[in-house]
Length: 244
Image (cartoon, rainbow, N blue to C red; front, side, top):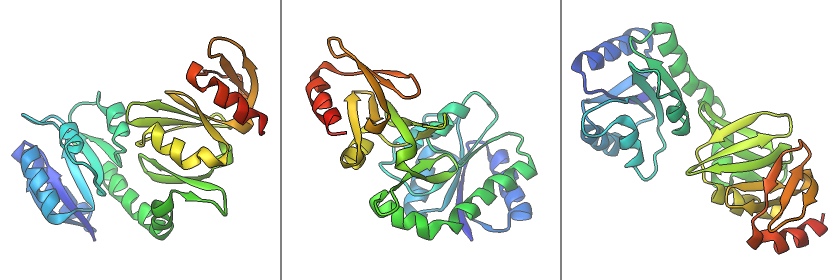
């Protein structure tokens, strides 16, 4: 069973969602319902749910405020809202899904099914969760909005920080937004050929194509991206580069 809490300041919306889950998502066990962020916080503390259906616009504290007030959480989040302009912010909170009201039954079922897909890889996830890196297979776990991805870290071109989030750029041109800070990846990958060249960028040193001299200078990567090199890191970068 998927243990869930429903959070919405509108009683009618709570009852509608509760009824839909009971009829169409029988794998979901509703532990409790909250009409405010304060009530939700208490329920989360009491039950430690697997899933929270979370309204965004609520009085006093909205759904994002609630999540930011919790130091760390292990539950998945499905946002429910009547407004479609919060999608990007929802992704930054690694939301499992984002449902627009009135909620469509098929979209609800699809969102809930994502947890089951994640559970299939739960054993693998737990191994990676402890270490984040699998040195033997040269893999790294990257949490994404749908769960997580395990990739070969040699396929990563660079990391670019954005506050508490990080954009991961791949050699094939793809990009992934993860809810981890750049500092975490700096510490994790420092011994595996990655170097923090600037406050906002970590690069794969094997992907360096050239260097343009300057006060700090610019580093050209194999995709022709140019990344600023902080003046304070110039000497260390050039020393590190010579070892490749």
